[in-house]
Length: 237
Image 1 (tube, one colour):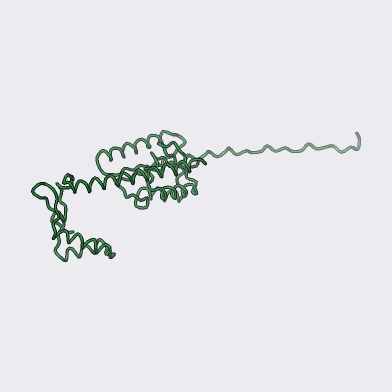
Image 2: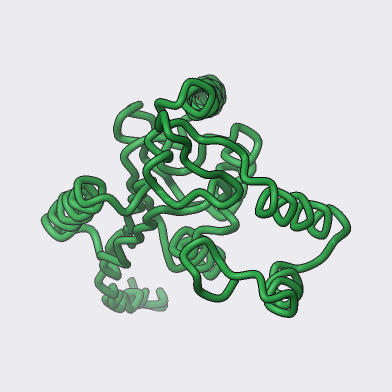
């Protein structure tokens, strides 16, 4: 029609869609621990490390951060060098997932175990306890982890009590394996049992008194050397 404005078609510009960024691989670490330096224990530690190395490197969606292993460690987490290094990396947001054999590998102390778990949860770090088949992030896991940790602590305490009783009983009836080793403060009698050797026993008592009064181990060693008191095998204290 004459006089009618001609409508212009809107200009449609093709959107330039950016390809989605690839998801980064999950950063995974494993923690292993054994309680002694005996050959069979060290072999077990090596087997654990190789096992987790294979699992992590065999998953194309995972990136290995490290295998952390403590051997013949103290009972507390704070005194385990490798575990502390693992926690440091978690606090620096460098780890997403930790694999470990069982709750006992983390800690046999219930309070310490739970404190560590709550910190890892707050950092967004997942933990998989293989033996118990539990993930830290599972809402129902904390109750079960608390129960398992309590059982592990009770088991450890009972084992320690049994070992102490066995050592004490062995000394009392003369059957202890320690009898054949240098034992400061004791002497082996004619019948093969141990008896107190008073000159050295008094030194032991004095060491305990110093320690109770707050003396450091280095200061006690210096005091013993000043008194010309030698170690059980004849060397310096």
